[in-house]
Length: 477
Image 1 (cartoon, rainbow, N blue to C red):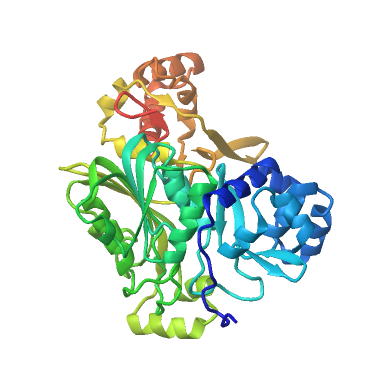
Image 2: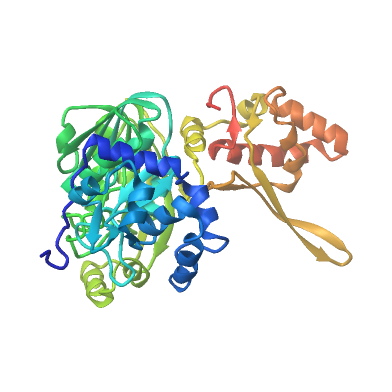
């Protein structure tokens, strides 16, 4: 009998069983949109609506049965399970630990999510209990890292701390060879299962800690979602490291740069102890080595109480630890790095939130951007990327006065404040005219003072260029 809290049995099923499981999932159109449609128009998996979901799904055929089993954790009677999972074969999946026989019913020991066209098996966290030390999860941090990653065709990539393998599988689409490492054997088993479920063959799995399994190698792309939480613990493999404070984040950020090929990029999620009397980015700047470009992002900065409440129920013990260490504020964000070989520029932005869409192209333009003086800006032939403009106006004394104006790329954590007079120029930035010519046309057609428009346009153009909203001859589309 398995001891409570012990790591349950899990091995990769044979190739035929995994091929059959994939066929069953694909045949039922098991994917993000179809799952959401089957669940209905409410936020999925709210505890108070679980029975509503189950009742609705029982009327939606094989897809509903698979969602009940692999997303909501409901057992199916053996005949129904055999029908919807054919030709996978129940015995092989039970033997591997993916399924569990319960009398004349069958239950899933794993959850299967769909993300960005991938099928991802991972552990399920029970509603009545928190995560165990052996859990291999897929969640918001994985999606954040995927959205931040710069995607370029490359020869080699490293997914450090692969977990269920999602970053490695995403990288396999634009990289010839991917190495995925993890200290946790269960994580590598999941990554192996998921590579097979998605018919991906260019991912190599290696067991080991940090950069040990790839000593002496270099990569065009490195991605990592390390166990970055600043905590007094070390038992949850996906959350805690064996290093104190924010040392795990420092080590991964610093060492990743040493293992990048020239012009290679790394994207790393991290948490760090915010300095008391310095800018929030100070610790991260110290981790950037000479010869690297870096884009540093802060998503949140919270008190120890807020931080502990996010990660644990043992708040008092964690607060005691923070008091002993003199920690008063903790930040969470990301470091996006590019190896240059010499020189290097560091920029730091406080983000509005974590990204909701893929923003790697924008971040590559930010890394490509260089300081430009006014004459260079005026001579530049810039093209605005697709974006949204939001403007606030206040009604006073019978008229509207334009207030805050900003532009944002949908899903991006970075936006740009626009000087109101620059709005007359922005639509003319189509890559054919110089900024100076666009200003001339705006002044001529609006009748506004040219110098006034130029001052606003220069200020706004510089902001847009530095934050990746503009394509120019020196940046990439």
